[in-house]
Length: 398
Image (tube, rainbow, N blue to C red):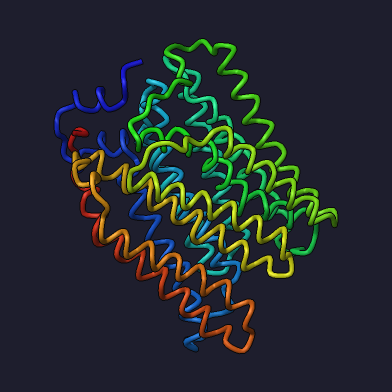
């Protein structure tokens, strides 16, 4: 299979106003929408603590950050990279329109407090998106990296999770709701991140991708690596069910061991670039967050925010920079550290620290929660100002 950069470089410059370009590269609409939904989700806390009459936004905030912010980045990245990696047709306008509309509709319902309707909309959104990817997989001329089996498990987790939380919306302490929440809020994002990270770090370091079969045939080595990734994914999913059946420490340590084993065997550690180091730092934050959860389960929510803020959101913004700059023909700008993103990263880690400390200092909880929200929103706004304009530029990679 020709290298993706070579195929892109052969493409002529195009205008993003062309709907065909948007269908070929869905990140152009999903990334901006995702970061705006993320800002909205965090802003709910500022409105609540400012006394604007906003109801306590714990559920709405969580849904907007996962089903809005993170889902949009997942849709944008996989919708762009999936067909290209497999040499399959790009998404159709009808498919893309349905996914985008359902995602925004789900966010609107969550903003209005209609959480069950929001989850049902998001369930259909995931079904359409997963169906579109499955169709491309059947039409493929080439096969994706073996670790992408975790992407399939992540999408399946999101579908099951959205269905369970919608079903048990009025019984939030039931096992069905708690397991569904874990599948939706954690597995839906964690598993695709684990699946994509080894491939993407190699792209950032310009390393070869030896696990890409150049045909529809799946060689034995590919199947072996895919089986290993599937076992890791199954262990992580099972660990959350073990949590639910009142064995939280057992589940937490199974999760830590599974993630550590995967990192040790799959992540490339040699080579240094600014964005590769950012991605590694974010992956390390995910691991640290789950370790803290295992060691100090009493501060579970704070530990999970280590995973969410300096892990998931940091990864989304890092990957999106590479995608946007690459598809805008601006890879030369990534040869050096990006000052604006360094500022954003500092703010992201300050947000993580402040959010965790909020649980340790009950008397100053409101101040720390507000500080965390402000830091994250400023980081997102910096990203919007410096990255989003390049979404409108459609040129081949340099």
